Length: 124
Image (cartoon, rainbow, N blue to C red; front, top):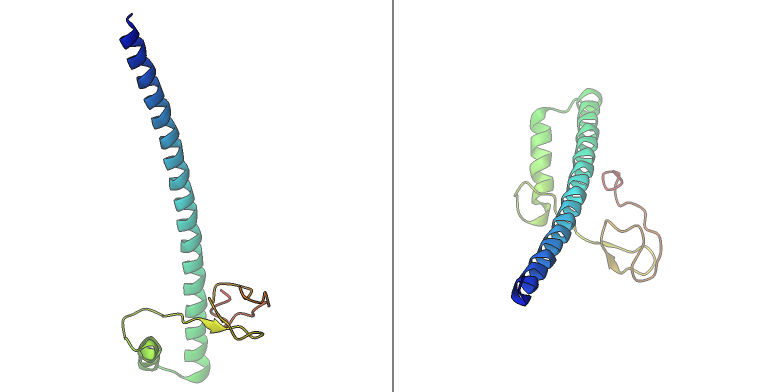
């Protein structure tokens, strides 16, 4: 076997090792993505259950109709200026320093003050 053949064989082995490493990284990313997808599906199902329970209670206890529900959904959807079928979550203000903070954070990033959920829906 010539020196060139040895060099080529070593290059091929290195490329195969690199490919195996890349494949393992891809498998890990796919696994993490699937786990996150499963978590989101679980959250979606809980939100759907809570939403349906609230609607049943409102319909039974308050005598609301489907038209009332649809009208309220459209009104809520339009609060951000666009009726597009999406709930736009605007930043809230820290109860301690009044800084704008993302609703998903439990603490203010500026002063560290713990933030209560803005609404019961945000706590789900």
